[in-house]
Amino acid sequence: QLALDLGFMPVVPPLNTRVAPWEYDREMYKRRNEVERLFRRLKGFRRIFSRFEKLDVMFIAFINFALIVEGLR
Image (cartoon, rainbow, N blue to C red; front, top):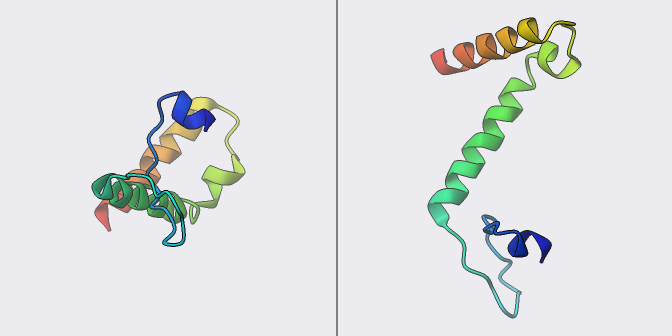
């Protein structure tokens, strides 16, 4: 309820057994799924989630590198 009060929109579809189902945007749900899959693939780059780099610049550079590699796949 707090999320709705703050202006957030539900993206996850309601269960079929729900008495009062809410409206959700199907296209937004598809895009949310794509973002979640991107984060799952980025977890394969262990350096990102282990944060081996001490400098923020190097960390951001490796994130950019990982995104480029994913874009080329």
